[in-house]
Image 1 (cartoon, rainbow, N blue to C red):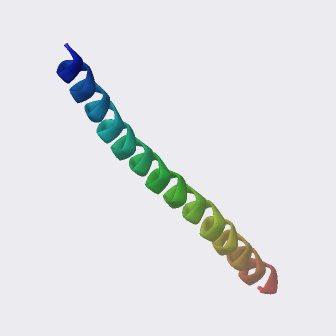
Image 2: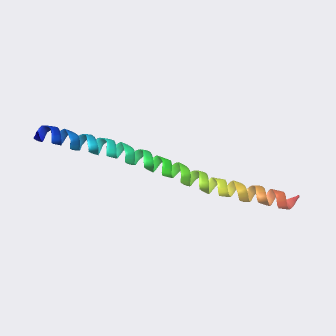
Image 3: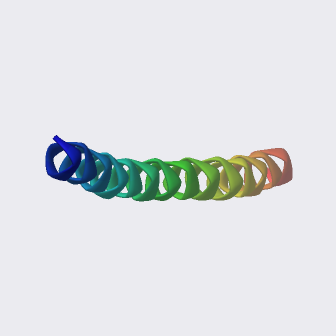
Length: 51
């Protein structure tokens, strides 16, 4: 009984850690896209105003 509980805890920690890493990577990608998307938008806006 104790061994099964211990294995469940290890599995939970392992999959929880993998899930947390995936969420962190997705959050960074979204942050990157937002930051550089806004920069790109303002660059295009400047180019359009020059014409």
